[in-house]
Amino acid sequence: MEFLFEYGMFLAKSLTILLSFIIVFVVILGSSQRSQQTSKGELEVKNVNEAVKHISQSLTRSMLNPVQQKAQDKADKKRLKQEEKNRKQQLKDDQGISARVFVLEFNGDVQASGVDALREEVSAVLSVARAEDEVIVKLESPGGVVHGYGLAASQLQRIKAKSITLTVAVDKVAASGGYMMACIADKIIAAPFALLGSIGVVAQIPNFHRFLKSKEVDVEVLTAGDYKRTLTLFGENTEKGRQKFLEELEDVHALFKEFVSENRPQVQIEQVSTGEAWYGKRALDVMLVDELMTSDEYIVDKCETCDVFSVQFKETLNRWQKVLKKIEVITGQWQSPVQHLAKLPDSQIK
Image 1 (cartoon, helix red, strand yellow):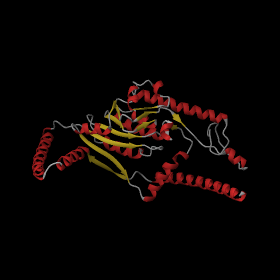
Image 2 (tube, helix red, strand yellow; image 1 turned 30 degrees about the vertical axis):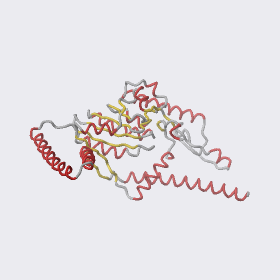
Image 3 (cartoon, rainbow, N blue to C red; image 1 turned 45 degrees about the horizontal axis):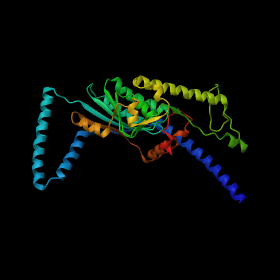
Image 4 (tube, one colour; image 1 turned 60 degrees about the horizontal axis):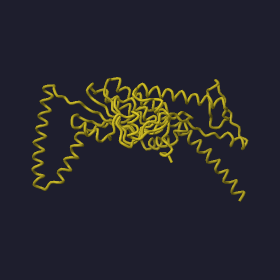
């Protein structure tokens, strides 16, 4: 039994070391891949009006008998002919041009890896958008690293800088880094049970120093500068380093609060910046959102008066790059003990 125990301990240590090397290798290789290639992919644009109309017509047609279907087909052809005639007349007169709505989607992970696609989409929209147009961003994110979501928020600020109306729609969750992005909008709409807020900062890092010391393994951490490294994975953490790290967290939190206050001055920042998150109606009560409505309802309503287009950048990845990207998402939190914008309530992560 003692032999099996020793063998098990040896195997566990070996696997831990091997896993550490794999993580480091993936991170280095991923960084290398990103530095060597530019964004490759294509922009996919869909007419939402046509999609909504097609669904409605398909359902209506399925409820008709053959004679009624024939009459409906004839009426549709006449209607389409008249619509095309009206469109040409509008272009000729240069009047009555309807406003356009561009719908983007951002599904955030811890690393905010969707920011590259968002950059391409925003650049494309801004190249054609007019002052009377609107951009809707369907946003879903529980938050993540500060620098990633800071860059994602900056992409949305580009829309505001061009004086184009920005609406953010949240159907499930826009917490922490997700809310950092959402608060930039001229209008935030959310489903009744969507989760919003969590204006706080959290960081965690494992430390193996005591374990390595018990095995008589030394780890040398050499730095130039008092605070080049505050907390480490394998070295001995000091109270001085720990205190400095806490000061950095507080500073990030202060910046986060200032950012929300600048973009949504109507909120009572000290009330909502405790790291808590609010559901639907509660978020409306504390003015984290402007209206309770699903993105589907809002977009379908826009189809009645505007030309609505879905804009998505589809990145082209080979099989190895897809696997690498998945591994990077899983292991992203090991890259460095960076600050994360606040997590969801414990009830959401059990």
